[in-house]
Image (cartoon, rainbow, N blue to C red; front, side):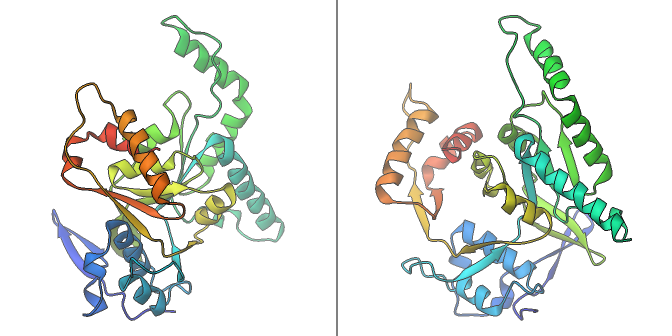
Length: 303
């Protein structure tokens, strides 16, 4: 299926041509330009995948004409730009890909064709155990013991990084997954080659860590999913959802002296629970945002 609303435009940046999917092709009479930012990301995602069978004109029209007062009823597809794994849930996913290659070989096919279709990044951080502490050598000793204990798993993941396209492993001792995602892996704007042209689009993700939402503090849309959903996304399958309701949370002023981001999070959480936000997106806005550092924003997003 190919939607009539997907119209590409060229964008020149530093002498390089990128293709983007603006909302111009939607015509007049819709609310696309005034949508909450999170829904704009979902709408761009639909337009960019308009040629796929899982996107219809009805999906795009429903999102472009979103009614904030209406109960969610229209299901849409979302294709994240990348998938984030940690070693606890990531190893089974890579094992599945390896088994698929064996099956392809038995069928007389080319096993090298079995690869993740979406970029996959696996951060090794769930195997840490503290045997040494209270000394300057503690980190080095704990890392050495961790590698010894998990040598077979780590060798397998290293093989996977070399064997599969679109698969990157962040080695042990680097940091916890949502910290590494925030500080090293996030792009802000993603780019990829498709049919001889370079597309530019927002960085989005799903991850198998419950703290994946921490990346929202950087303005990157992402949330946690189960291992099966993550593996499906690795293979290019969309995540399906109802068009969500969006709750706006206005921040004004600044934190008082002695107050921390944790204090703010506890207050925000109390108010959001009272309002009811299950299954909804929450957007923070207002003049108070300029007084929050990235660390503070990440703390709020991590709640």
